[in-house]
Image (tube, rainbow, N blue to C red; front, side):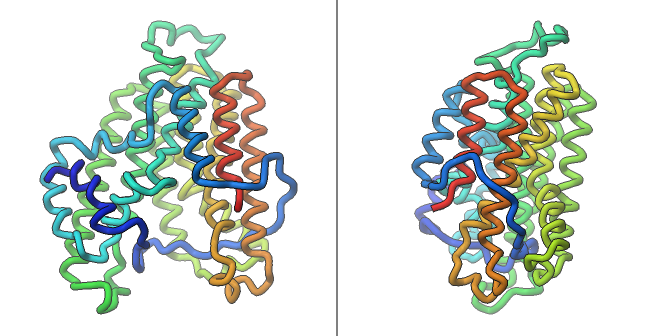
Length: 355
């Protein structure tokens, strides 16, 4: 059985739901303060989200939902696929990560690469710099920008795989044999490193030092953000201003930086000026942070009651989600009206809706 077959069978092996146990990166409960009004609508459903993404994929010219799997299906990973099979039946979160990439209605939709493609099409070619005129362009997007979108997804997928490493010091007997967890960790490290290596190779092929610098700094931000998540006390996130500031800083590092700098890099590849690059950066930053805040706003109120005695945790997360959504929409105002811009706006509305 190759990796593609394994991934497609994971939902059957694992069921439609499941959650990682005691990961080394376990995120803290973040609570934030109220931050203003919202331009969008107030309801959300997976069906609407799927529709928004499906329409956006038509605009960029091809489905992007499994963009990062192209590398996962390579011959080099066939041996790793055989080893991953040994983890079936264990509690190792690497299996949950792999299942989520092809089954989960939210996680399998590769948002980052799609946003990079949409922002590329929304901006179009530079009106003042004609040095890109000879580049291949399909559906209004340069081939180098499509490569960048795939690289962004490779980096994100590698991070998901690496974050699935189990903290062996916190294992319990119910988690399964220690040897299985150790073996799963080795596979997760090897697989994540393989994806990162391919991303670095793809960056080199773009032959643009500024783009390499931007994505390298995004990787540094990701590592720093995860380190801060691990070293920050969960109790420090309870509604105070310091906790809010900490959440914003960590969320940008661990989630916002990659999308923000990838959007900026897409503008650099098309030789847009600094102002356009900054607007693309701002959209990517606020889009990612809004999406992350939404996760907090969709948490179970009953389970959180003891952690949010002040009564502001979840509602403040919703407010912050909408704040960053508004900032993302403001960044789009500098781009000319187009179907790509409308798709980017619809994505903001979709990730800032709550049931």
